[in-house]
Length: 350
Ligand SMILES: NC(=O)c1ccc[n+]([C@@H]2O[C@H](COP(=O)([O-])OP(=O)(O)OC[C@H]3O[C@@H](n4cnc5c(N)ncnc54)[C@H](O)[C@@H]3O)[C@@H](O)[C@H]2O)c1
Image 1 (cartoon, helix red, strand yellow):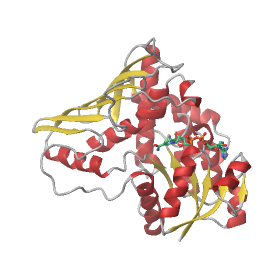
Image 2 (cartoon, rainbow, N blue to C red):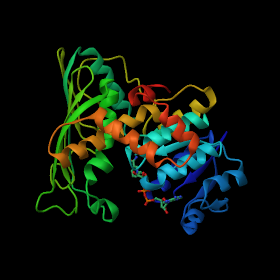
Image 3 (cartoon, rainbow, N blue to C red):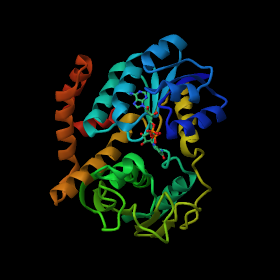
């Protein structure tokens, strides 16, 4: 039995409570939130607090599920790792790429597992699409069309880049998984149509050059009423040996493959993979080293849109590394970051 603390008792925290409840190998030991009333509502009768380290000492928990707001991911996860806890964190890994690199170094120094839950990548249909892609030979391009018109209210409608920062990371992470490739460069434009109810840019079009030569093309909108795509978007893989397509909701269409090879789905699947990894000691998919380049795709796309020109991922990584060293407050983590001579190599070293 793995005893977990839930950090962050907001909207997504409630979904995680259901996932914890549904997993017989996991027990909720306490709830941390700056809003103690929200923590008490989430875990009636359980220990609650505002600080995960104090709550860990009180409860003897093994792990933290970090479902706080993105800006709190870095402090909450760092505190948990150095309190001796493993962490399963919501996407995005951190609020900035620099903080994400700091978390990679913190995981290395603390020796604890830090896995990021990208719930939309844990989808058996996406695993099937990946198996189909493997049958099609060299890939020319992969595209995602994402068009919806949600009225969230709240922070998303105030963000400068709501679509890229809050949503597109799901598709970018899935594209890396699908291709088994990493980003090299991106050219991106973002815009906000006159009828948009978002303050920032609700539309984006980005072309990524990926390792191996394929292009990943993302076209999305959050103010596109009518004929909405699925929340996963509509996918097309165009390869030398043919085409595979996925509408994001139903089984993909493409070459015959031997059954779906994905066992896990959504946040419940991520939780099961996390606890299996704690028992086995095997590094899971989504471990922080492997996740960071998905956030780098977001930050590079935002940078390209701001500069109005293509951007190299290596340049974005180098700037984030400098910033991470500059901003790091823990000497042992700063030393670890300083020891990296190549960020991409450091990210492969899980
Ligand atoms: N995987 C998905 O599909 C999906 C969907 C929605 C949200 N999310 C992610 O889940 C996370 C939470 O989103 P949400 O919609 O639940 O936000 P929310 O604002 O509803 O809840 C966040 C909670 O975190 C608490 N909090 C903030 N700082 C804290 C700190 N330092 N320590 C403890 N608690 C703190 C807040 O008081 C709040 O109760 C975000 O990272 C978001 O991107 C993922």
